[in-house]
Structure formats: structure tokens, C-alpha cells
Length: 223
Image (cartoon, rainbow, N blue to C red; front, side, top):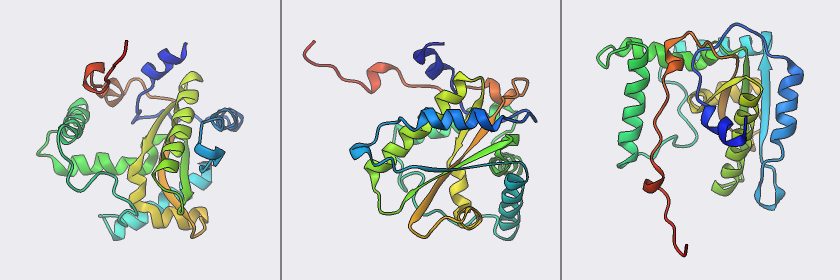
């Protein structure tokens, strides 16, 4: 596929097959992803890759943490602005409604919605979890660079027939994750990412979030 085709094909997968991913394939993805651009060539990203018993232990610790505190540990940064205006609030609402509709969970069934949200912390059944962090001293420009690195990871995975789902939900367990990974105090945990083979038979993977047309976000002059 061309780069444009890979970008269009990539989506956030929320149901994975119980099929292992070869370590060498992940290493090759990260080896290529490291060529992401970063201002001053700071390369501010760090990623911990877990699978097997190491991943199972982290998921169990997170499960135990939520059993004690169902609301989670809070986040060290706002995932969304506290007063999210339009049109962004409407887009977020529509995306959530479409996701739950894909798996026949009505709005009034809050317990079912919470159970589905909790599947974030099982990585939706993915066999591999990637956990991204960045030095605390860095600000928005370096966060952009981390995002470009993550985008490279997702596109390279797609190119190999693998699927991903970037999950900011993991920020709700930042203390447990940081302790388990042994992150130093000067490093901020950002998010997790599920990696594996998509379960194409699952209804949730048949849903795609919408994108705004070009005219709503681009302006041209001088042509």
C-alpha cells in the first residue's frame, strides 16, 4: 500500500485476536519509527513494550487498583479541556455514541458502557502493550514530537498487517503503571497502546469514526 492508503486504512481497533506478535517485528517497527521528526532532534520519547507474563502482571495490578478506587488515580494532565466547546464537544459525543451503537449498548445502560470502557485496561485483548512516556521538563512542542513518533508506530504496524489502539485511558492508572515500569520521577507517563491482530469478526471493529471535510480545517491563499 502507499502511504496515503495506509493512513486511510489505519483505525483504532478495540477487539484483538489471541495471537502473539513476534518480538522481532515490534523491534523493526520501533527501529523505523525512531526517524520521526523532533525539534532540535531531542527525540523525547520512551516506550516500554510488554507482553506475556510481564503484561499480565501489569494488567492485574491495574485491575486491583480499580477494584479499590473505581474512579482511577486521576490524571497528571487534562485529557480534554475542562470546558470543551463546539464543534469539538459534538464530535466527541457523536464518536462515543457511534462506538456504543456498534456493539448495541444503549445510552441508558451505564453499567455496560463502564464495562466496555474497562476493557481499555485489558488492552481489548491485544497480546502486546506499548507504554509511552516523556520527560516532565518538556512542554507542548515535545508532546507533539512524541505524537509523531506514536503515529509512525501505528502506521508501520498497519503496514505489517497489525492493528493498534492508542489509549489515553491508561493515564487514569499512571501511578500503578509508573511504579510497575520503574519510571523515574522526572518522567511522565502519557498513554498506552494496544498492538496485535484485529478480530475482524467483532462488530466494534466494523465502525469507523468520521473525519471532517477538507474545507472545514484548511485555508489556501496565493494559488
